[in-house]
Image (cartoon, rainbow, N blue to C red):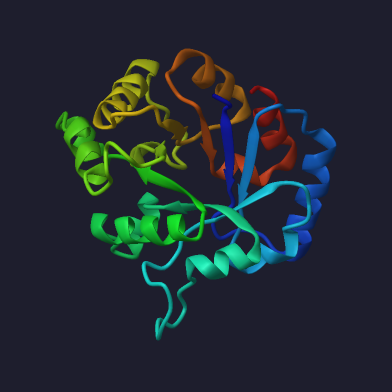
Length: 230
């Protein structure tokens, strides 16, 4: 199973910045594994022919209609996205996304043959009360454990952008609890303060199939180093 390395730009960049990023990344990348870049939706179409697989960062739960500001799965597909992140903790918190709406988004993406990357993760409070396993199971309970082809990204909320990284044991316990839910092999990524200096350790010493990289992905050379480790 190839590792999947995903750059999540979040709400960063301009056309000039992204063009420069792609130029620098392509000069430095040597990886036999799968690399995906999640751009802001307004830039996906402009960079669809730059030789790297693209992802959306969110999608509407609706097929179409009077939903001002939302982006449908069909629009993402037309723009050139092959993947889409859903359920990111920032969207769950800031946009009040529910598990049920994430299920609906999952279905919309599957209908358009876009690969969903379903994010799950616990807060520091959940971790400290030792309820991580139950929390992850609840977040994934809306997905069919027997039939879905899944990519799950485990991102402990307390590690996103903080510089804190769970221990290898903590990561494997969380990944194990995710794999227990499903009756078939699934691809599980880790995200949360990933950078070139710790990516190799994470890939070698935990039961993950790739990485979801946030802040470090904005530096093309740094992200290329992470991709090369695979």
